[in-house]
Length: 192
Image 1: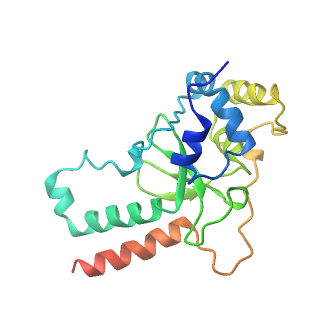
Image 2: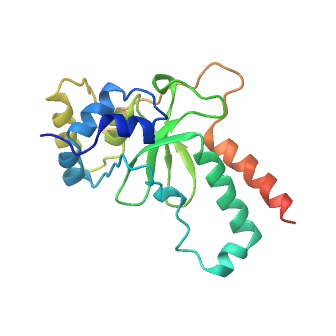
């Protein structure tokens, strides 16, 4: 099955021009099957940034110092994430590049959930991170078999077996949730 996603455009708009990792290339080739199976969406559009959409908030919400500080903090942290996928629950998955831009192969996979929280995902790559998010046993097996059929090794019997990528050894490494909390405090104090 071919994809409607252009790899060069995807690289430029989702990955800052970095090459598309092999597992992500496989995902993009099978994106229609993956979307049908899991509801996962991807886009190579330069304008695609649903994680920054705050149109659901009222004017009163937007004028609330606590909420506006959180919006600013989320937006600031998102600048350090190369988002590549959206779940059907309006959660976003991508590479945590951090303030010190990391190579994609070194970047942990991160999720911005629909409550505005950043969490490091299980998985050594995007496909594993998406697999780790599938709790339905039948869907898990179908997703796993799809990627095994194209040469990926996925030796996991369930989502609970998928390991987390180790934190980088660099002492300057900061987790996305830590940065979000720090920035939220800074922006909140500025609004007092």
